[in-house]
Length: 283
Ligand code: MF3
Ligand code: CO
Ligand code: CO
Image: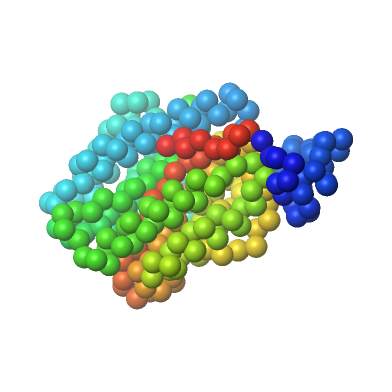
């Protein structure tokens, strides 16, 4: 719970004890509504937890299957089969405009995100992000990881490791009352100190009842003073580049996002719940 000397929930930047503590109780629901944030009920949280567990389980298997010689289409086919076997739906298929054509995203080397599985076989030296979003009983769980195929270059290893650290360090600080902008500060501080840049054109997002909900979670530096509240579920999914931060979306498919300079990019993603006392990683 928020302590007396922590910043107040309301964003006033006064101490909690000098603001809404305790005789002026903070109206969680009104604050969430104002920011279009859905605070999940215990029942919804159970559903999101189940979907998140399945997404993480499927992702685990796909990461084990990602080896030199295996095509990204093959990984997609495994994901299709596993979703079917578990009575679940892969959220990416048909999502957005134009409709995303496959059931997972596979983003290799200089591809930042939203790579489309295809006939390309993984090669020694590649890095690949596999992103799985599962729908179970109408609830969503969203997660992604990197796999290094054999020996990879210093540049590719650096973005893979730095993006993992950025994700885990930004999760470690999460608790009610924290301004969302702190996430971007933690990620940017770490990435910049390791000679990497942070993609600003794609963001984390509320997730659970829909694929992409409020709030937006920026990974780069920002001014978002919105406070985290118990019952929020959202992703953090920092995309970290070895060179320039800019992304270019492929005009031939309107999805594949690549680095502008062709240097490597990496990303890890979790779905997270804000609890009364801190946070829980659901994936
Ligand atoms: N899973 C991605 C995310 O983390 C979204 C992919 S959109 C899709 O938000 F259409 F490509 F699936
Ligand atoms: Co996501
Ligand atoms: Co995702």
